[in-house]
Amino acid sequence: MKESILDVLLYLFEHYIANDADLVRDRDSLQNGLLEAGFSPAEIHKAFDWLDGLAERRHDAAAPRAGGPTRIFFGPELDKLDVDCRGFLMFLEQQGILDASQRELVLDRAMALDQDELDLDDLKWVVLMVLFNQPGSEAAYAWMETQMFEDDGELVH
Image (cartoon, rainbow, N blue to C red; front, side, top):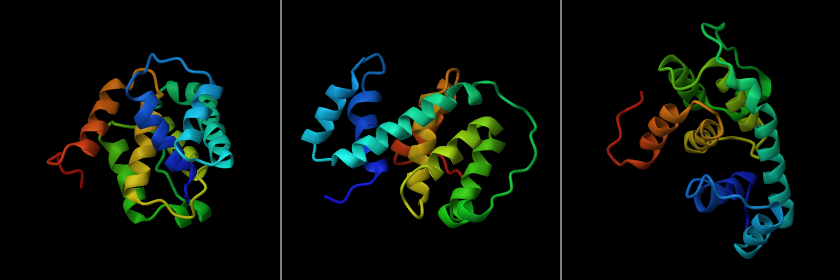
């Protein structure tokens, strides 16, 4: 099975985290569940590292910053995030779904994935996981979840 960090994260999110946010599991039981699901130990380790990075930066993004400067993407960001992805991030910030610090956290976590390029669907999952992890972002998370899971969701562009 060819999997990526994002595949492991999505599996964790869909099967453990999103279904029961109060569920407390230790890493060993989560790792055993992921191994049973067919993920490699290396990818599981990378996914846990990704989640650790998200947790470490959680408090950095908790204090909203209003009216920050325009974000200029450079080098590796331009290579990994196409125009649709960058435009979507700008849209989310303009609509108040993400603030500047949350946008930077989304970018940090997107860049931490082991993929050369992310498509818009992959980026939406990263946004959803970041919002899920941010205190006070329940409304933004609910809006983003609606955009992803409703067939006739409101158009975002």
